[in-house]
Length: 79
Figure 1 (spheres, rainbow, N blue to C red):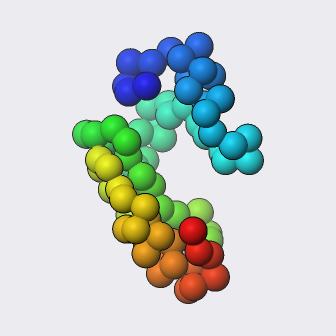
Figure 2 (tube, rainbow, N blue to C red; figure 1 turned 180 degrees about the horizontal axis):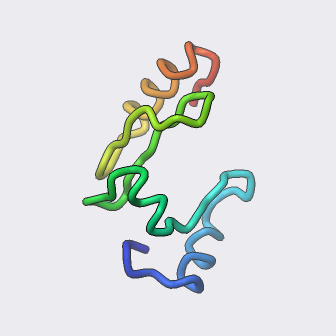
């Protein structure tokens, strides 16, 4: 839905995802915390303590995401 979406568009878009996947609407504080964004989608990777480890702007292939998740979870989480 990009950067100009409204609440209605967000609710509609989220219907395409499983309900157990958390989703949030970014506020200005959150955007400052992650250093803003320049592309959509933006993938954020957090460690088990909730600290931002890295972010990837733009498309991230399934293979690359799976590799990152395997590394960050020490092989305990596979997709």
